[in-house]
Amino acid sequence: MRRSFGTILVHGPRRGSILDHEEFVPTPQLIDTPPVESLEKATKADMVRPKSPPVVAPTERVVTEGKGFRVGSQKFHPRGVTYGPFKPDETGNTFPKPEQVEHDFALMKQLNANCLRVYHVPPRWFLDLAQRHGLKVLVDYYWPKHTCFLEDRETVQFARDATRNAAEALAGHPAVFALTLANEIPPDIARWYGARRLAHFIDELAAIVKEVDPQRLVTFVNFPTTEFLQPASLDFVSFNVYLHEPRPFANYLDRLQNIAGDKPLLLAEFGVDSMREGEDAKAQILSGHIDIAFRAGLAGMFLFAFYGRLAYRRPSN
Image (cartoon, rainbow, N blue to C red; front, side, top):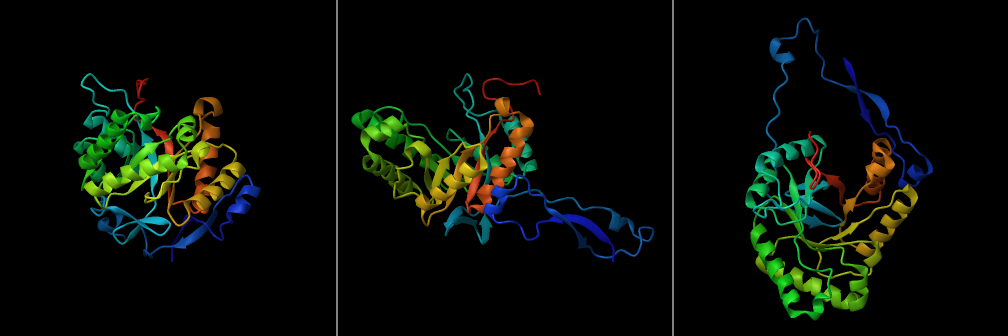
């Protein structure tokens, strides 16, 4: 029987042992393949590799299941990148043109991504393209959370209306992973109003989404300085975490699992500054962090950031 080389993980180390060693190299092993009598006798049909069918995302929505996600009967582990925000064009559009988006989606699939996070509500054509490429979309939307909004009736109503408009725009589309109700409420605002009052308002926004689209998943993207904000109505817990050192990163993920309880835990953003660290160091840190996050039992993660072209500085390539 002819053999070919493949690489698999055998007796992979526990998360603690990874932190005790700088590198973990998968063990190359021989994998049995179906026998072919000889290359000389192989028919032309044997030598032609069939074309892969076009990628089509499942039409079912993403749902939570225990500490993870599911699409239909299959487990779903979000492997995502952030996309944007982009500078609005002359018409106010905050997304690139369809041909550029399609090009970027193809690059994401080459990276083995199955999700992306955007920071404005996308148009329907954007979601249709994502569905065609087998990508799910985590959607942010804007309301002025950086102000003392609870003291201003107009701002509170703006947030409610923006939430309803976002839910209606995304309603029913299977490419939407979830809707984020807010991203990183400033710590001074959080402390001024207190955790209970802010959590109640975020729960109110969640109720608006569920009224419009009962099956739509919702989350609130938190970060370490406001980890005490813990709304009750979230379908899963999301955090942005930027820690370069492996051990503090792993320890903090353990803490976040305690905060998340029985809900899925998602890294909505994590990344490394390539200008400061350099491309090689960035790749090494991110590779280790992805492994640590997986072994810490996270439901998924989003790397910051992917741009087919940068939002404000666009390179020639």
